[in-house]
Amino acid sequence: MNTRILGLAAFAACLAVPAVAAVALSDAAGSYTISPSGSSIRFTIGKAGGGGFDGAFGRFKGTIRIDNGDVGRSKVDLTIYPESVGTGQGRIDAFLRSDAVFDAANNPEIQFRSTSVTRTGDTTALVTGRLTARGRTFPEKFTAELGGLRGGTIKFHVTGKVLRSRYGMDVGTPLYSNVVDFDMTLTGRRG
Image (cartoon, rainbow, N blue to C red; front, top):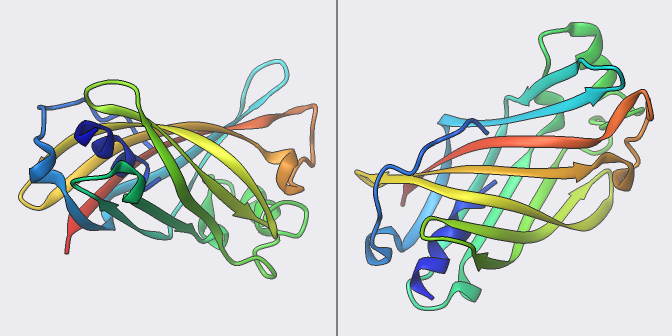
């Protein structure tokens, strides 16, 4: 059960981070604040016939609390600010921020709140929670892998797929995929 808690911390929901070494739960237990330094939230949306586009969110915040005794009491909270979306293409960025997609002016936050975790391996877990975007909330699942713990800093690699149509962001389908692939690196600092 203690190892399951490590997996929950992993979401505190995107580049691959290999598992460096096994971490004792007693060493990982505690509260962490997600640090923008060493963290990234990246996504990809495919396009029919190949291509598509990649992007990232520049602003986000969150916390991870790993409970040493009960995985059910561990928590992950993540807030993403959609006005910070960036693809490297100004026209696409403006479109994504508009009311056609994120409607960032009226919906300034995307939130994920964990509800459960299931251990899937020594350093991995399936994290389930409630994702809220554009005023709509649905359950979502993400796979988390512990990347390491050193000097009060914990790192996770988190991946998952979200259907954008659930949140009223399905403009451009079927030319552009309805599936958004997330790939996150989340670094938390104890305290």
